[in-house]
Amino acid sequence: MTKIGASLFEEGVEKGERKGEREVIIEILNQRFGEAFDKRLEENIRKANEEIINQIKKNILSITLEELKEILK
Image (cartoon, rainbow, N blue to C red; front, side):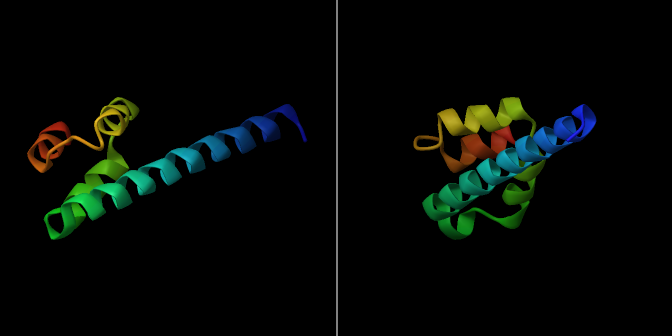
């Protein structure tokens, strides 16, 4: 594989890992908050930057729904 091909492959793997991580976060929060965790919050997590994702990950077991909404504004 060329250097460009390898670089593109690694970038794709990295994006896939980040996407998978976000889906796990969404699933955990969906289980915690049930119906109160709506599609809008899911989409905001999918679109969030890495800093926000890391903040949610660090606090995933203690974050309140109100705090989550504030972070995702």
